[in-house]
Amino acid sequence: MIEALGVPHTEVALVVRNGRPAGFDARIQPDDVIEAYPARHLPPGMEHGALLLRPPLPASDLRFIADAHLGALAQLLRLVGFDTRFDNNFADDEIERLAGEEARIVLTRDRELLKCRTLLRGYYVRALQADGQYREVTERLDLAPCVRAFRLCLMYNALRPASLDEIDGRVPEGVRERHTRFVTCDICHRVFWEGSH
Image (cartoon, rainbow, N blue to C red; front, side):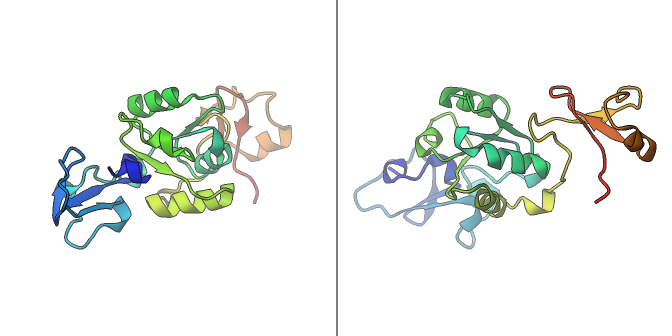
C-alpha cells in the first residue's frame, strides 16, 4: 500500500500501524492509521534499532551503485572517497543483482527500480544537477563525517599504492623528484600524487 502511493519500500525505515511498529507484511484493516518514516525523520521514542525495518548503516560502511542518470554524482561520491559503482549500460536487473551481492545502496532517479522486492536499501535522488544531487545525498545519508577525499579513481573506483619502479616513465621527471608517494589505478593506468595546491 505504501508503494502504491509512490513511496519505494527502500526509503521506509519504520512503519507504524495504529501507534505500534509493524512490518511490511502487516494486514491493513479499513480503520487502520498507517505512518511510514524514513530513517532520518523518526518520531521521538522510536529511534531504537529493534523497531526499525532497516537500521541505518554507519556512513563509514556505505557503498553505492548509481543508475545511468547519475554518472556525475557517482564521480563526486568517488572524489570524496565513497565506493560507487557506475556504468551507463547497467540494466535495472543488473543494478538489483549487484546491490544485493555487494551490499550497495542504489541511487536512482527511477522510482520503479526502487520498488524491486530484493532491494534492501536505496534512495530516490530528487535534484537534477550533480552538485544538488551531491548535497542532497550527503545530507540525507549523513556522509560528511566520513569524507576521505581523493582515495579513489574517479573513473574506475579503485586506487592502490604504486612503487617508484612502477611509475617510471609515467610521470614527469620533476614530479618524481619532488614526490615519493604515488597511487595508481590498475584499470585506466593513471598515476596520482599529492598536488601542490
